[in-house]
Amino acid sequence: MLKKSIFAFVLGILVVPGLCFAHFGMIIPDQAMISDQKKPDVNLTISFSHPFEQQGMNMEKPKQVGVLFEGKKQDLLQALAPTKVMEHNAWKVSHKVSKPGAYVYYMEPAPYFEKAEDKYIIHMTKVVVGAFGEDEGYDGEVGLKAEIIPLTRPYGLYATNVFQGQVKVNGKPVAFCEVEVEYLNEGKKIEAMNDFFVTQKLKADQNGIFTFSAPWSGWWGFAALSTSQEKIEGKEVELGGVIWVYFSEIPVKKFKK
Image 1 (cartoon, rainbow, N blue to C red):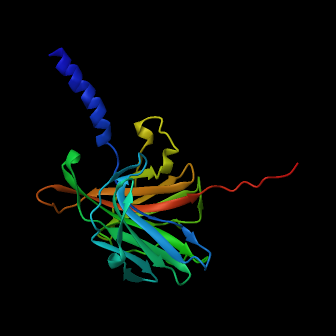
Image 2 (image 1 turned 60 degrees about the horizontal axis):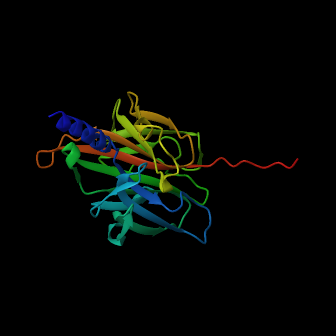
Image 3 (image 1 turned 135 degrees about the vertical axis):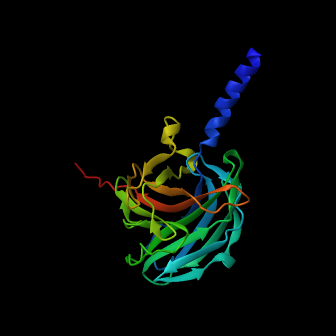
């Protein structure tokens, strides 16, 4: 009996931390800003994963993928092609940028059932790419059911700069919404001191506004979480409004003695 109890305890230690990993919808471009007119193509990968731990999950074809520019949406769903991210099924798409300004790329995934939490997850995800020195439209609202509206321009940021966003569900600010933050830990260059450092957590204020300062450069994901009033097959649905923001390394000029 004692051996069985010890085995169950050890198994719990091994299994439970994995259940705590944060899920993130991901739409990552190969360049956060475009300045070279000879390279106007934005190549995006779309996936669903645990970005810090670099653990992927198979992703079905999204329900919608598009780009918002100058107040108009362009459907990119038919241009999707399958790919692999973290050794799991994912998607990719290319889009040619033709004019200066901010391009808001977005996707709505098919519902993902998480057995460990006995619920469905829908993370509506965005990323904003700035082109040719113009930033008009970086705060454009796509109209997703759950969405983070950037109050800080979400590109041209240095590490340690502050990013602010406003959480909205059905077009209305969500007071005191929980926001999870994770670093896209490519190559597992960063090692967390313990589980608390894997996913940063904060809450928006009464107006749905949150603030975060990224400690180092790279892609950072922000997931504002809420529970949908609608259920799928009797199961709860986690709605996530997600935005990915790139923070650049601070350039240090070397001085000659």
